[in-house]
Image (cartoon, rainbow, N blue to C red; front, side):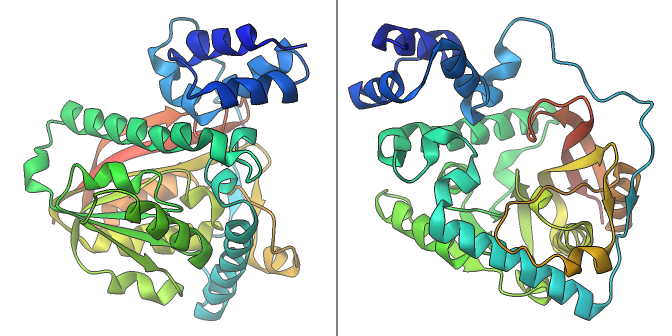
Amino acid sequence: MVSKEDVVAAYRLLFGREPENDDVVTHYATEVADRRALRQLFINSAEFRASYESLQGPRPPRAPFSGPPIEVQLEGTPDELTALFTKVKQQWQHLGETEPHWSVLTNDSYFQNVFHMNRDAFYQSGVSETDTFMQTLKRARIERASLRRCVELGCGVGRVTAGLATKFDEVVGIDISAAHLRLAEEYVRTTDITNISFRQLTSIEAVPQIGEFDVLYSRIVLQHNPPPVMARLVGDLLSQLNPGGIAYFQLPTYKAGYRFRIADYLQDQNNTDMEMHYFPQAALLDLIRERGCRILELREDDSIGLSVSAISNTLLVQKVN
């Protein structure tokens, strides 16, 4: 059994803060089976992962360097790219209509039936991610004052968008799902923020129409797209980045045994499940260079969870020409 005291202790020990309210404490005390389950739930949360680096203790094991190469098809015909994009769009529209907040942060606390008790923590995690981004800019000695227009790819329900809007003059939140965007607009209307606009990405051909910008932000987004779509999105967005502008984005670059072929993928008729895809790191570095950018920072991260067989990278790149 889990007591209310156990829940409060878990918040203080693992999150370093007090619970949002008594309803949250009661929820976990009555719904979680035992202390082990409570601990696992908190450790797997996005909030814990975001603060993990500030905690003392050994890092989890990383994927070994002895893994085999992955076989990934990165290029497709225009018709194939359209079919891939359409499939992703159907998946995320479904998720936006059923579990929009959980689909952004896959934690049981954000299922629709309990989201009202965890809303504050959900949006606070977006503020924490914005702060991490700002610290990354400082490490790279990037002057934020010169960066005015920010594009967030995969803004979802506006979790991070609001935080970005406190740092830049203009923020454009872009998402493939109309259902997610409706919730993002509703959330922004509850705030005093006025420098955000939202846009649905209706086709893969629409990416070059976004227009020039100074900042690209995208986390836990690209990974849900097939590799050829990732390549097109990253390439087109970096092409529109203003000289001196920066892109801060994350995507998985390796998983032992992963294989992607367009023809095989399109034969699968599943259009509802959340997917995870991987983009070979060498191809990503080539793409960045081809778009006239240089890498300022490249780090392994825990955005796809703790794994000994998969690697995710967060990159900060700058447009040179």
